[in-house]
Length: 325
Image (cartoon, rainbow, N blue to C red; front, side, top):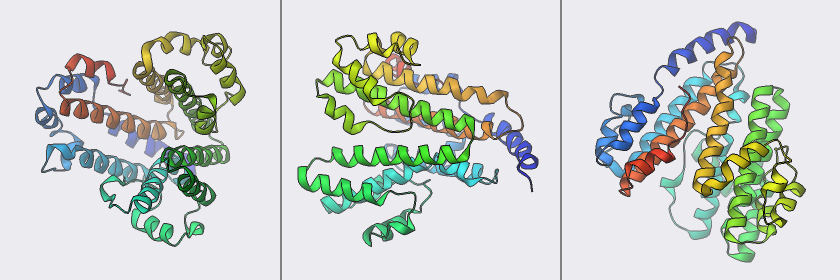
């Protein structure tokens, strides 16, 4: 069946599913809840309520279960699995990091794995133990070995994260290029650029050398590493960053502090994703729905985590991301 005969059905299905997305009003009500238990009860009549948890502190199980269900449901709507896979690579790379750290520490990290990647967890475990990277083509075996080697030399676990984050973005960039879908291509580019901007701000704020940024720099964006270096060397980074496509964004948001800037980055991406609302036959609304659910899950996680730590409702509301609906 031709793709243009399938996508109208997929888009119509997603439009129906969008009606069940959590509204900002619902999230604000959760933020006002007196405690974690009350906030969780507010989710009982939503799709999240399908997963029963015995302990309120295990809300991450509920969130992950719902996301996994989302990935499966959406994958069934479209014929091009690669369109979905590109957004699951981060889960695969998260899990390979967990496996490396589990091997290093010899501790059971079962609770740290996330479902919803392109590689089943048990399959990844087996292939990792055997170092059979050919059976995990999305995982860069050289990057895995480099991460293990760097940890052996430095005993610094941060190298595991930075090396594999670079590999993950490289995989996303490669897949986005091959897909030739302008919406996805631009999203991956923006995600890489905003990730690098957040890293630059963190490194500068912590007073670390530029080399720390260079090691964490991810590929796939349009902002070149030399522009970030020039910005880092300046006392006022904005004097250089305003030359980029994100100039006005940086001017408006870099003064908000790191937490505020991180939220602004997520909201900036969501504004782009919302453009898919105006598409009717192409796969953009399907992709947008996945991203909308991931942002929604992040908001739920932020609220429940803050409730666990008795953070004031007004502060929680400031941290909640812009939603799709």
